Length: 204
Image (cartoon, rainbow, N blue to C red):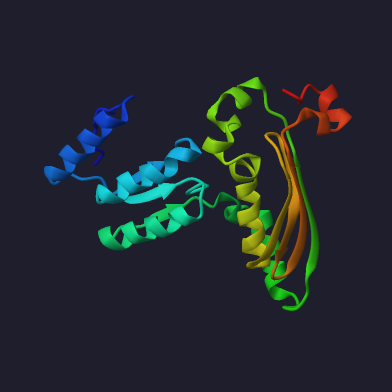
């Protein structure tokens, strides 16, 4: 039987915090909190969820600085709650098929991979938090994180990582995995788009 409830909406985090705490004290606590806020807020919002006695589902990246993971693991142990990360590319049929092919192939084979991702973003990107490297982590963290997760899932653990260039709109480097050597290039700079894409107006 469906239960109809009014949807509650908050524009101030402090009011949301108070509401969740009130529910918890009344024995009506939430089971999960989903975090899809700007990257730099993920860490604090995950902490809030765990300390509110909830499991947390968070989009990538979970944190911007790797050392923050240790603190979250400690809070998981303290609260008995867990953080789950959304790893959506692992559910794509083509990626699953590629992984199956690699897993069934020679274990000592190392593949050469070129990953190039070209897109463009309007001026909104650069004036939003996404254009601030201290808040987004930059293009490699904000966009590349999805591809890096997919590559490690398919080709194994990271053995080496070299970042050759990292600006507000371009990042490139080399990633050595257990079964792959990956040259990667990411760009949101429209100058790198193919002319055919520009002619079709795909540069905004």
